Image 1 (cartoon, rainbow, N blue to C red):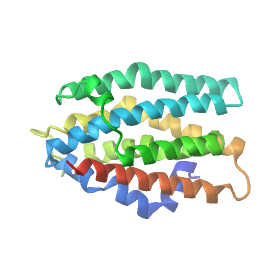
Image 2 (cartoon, rainbow, N blue to C red; image 1 turned 90 degrees about the horizontal axis):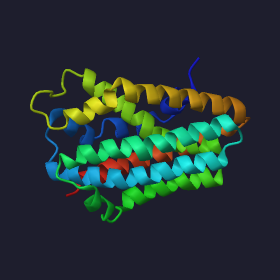
Image 3 (cartoon, rainbow, N blue to C red; image 1 turned 180 degrees about the horizontal axis):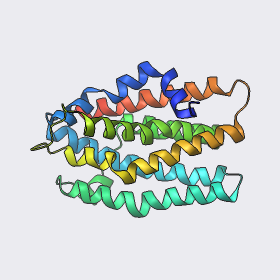
Image 4 (cartoon, helix red, strand yellow; image 1 turned 90 degrees about the vertical axis):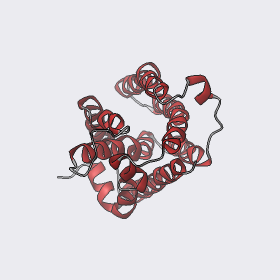
Length: 220
């Protein structure tokens, strides 16, 4: 039996393929992405992570059980205390300081997706929020796995291969598996007749916004 993520992914296949096989992604794999594009993406991703942390804070507020509050708190701590530090260290290698990134204006695409996620969380419940977040967390896990396993991906001399390794890593894949389980549990606890229509709409729109984020990254 397919889980919720697999169902959403299948029902949104056109949007999902545009997102996960985007030119930005392919250029990471073959190492041809202009460095200015990658730096722009990294800076905006820093700003994105700040709002991702806010989404987990919102998840704690939306939670009905102590277990869900703990899970949200764990996610928030992981972003603020671990992932942000790793991102800043990674960006430093690309000549981007944290102060420089914090001072960047948000691109319209960054604002569009992050505010959409927060809006869905405020408007709906914990399941709506996690579905809106899923294309980011689970999409990156799929992209990392596919690119790392592809014989077409350039390894030696590819400045972007460390990025691919990061999302293909066992640690990140474990986070993705846990998120899939959370989606299934929330659907079991909060799902009902007619719920899939709205969840699919949310997932498709969030996936389109992720694609727009790649497009933003291609602009220098």
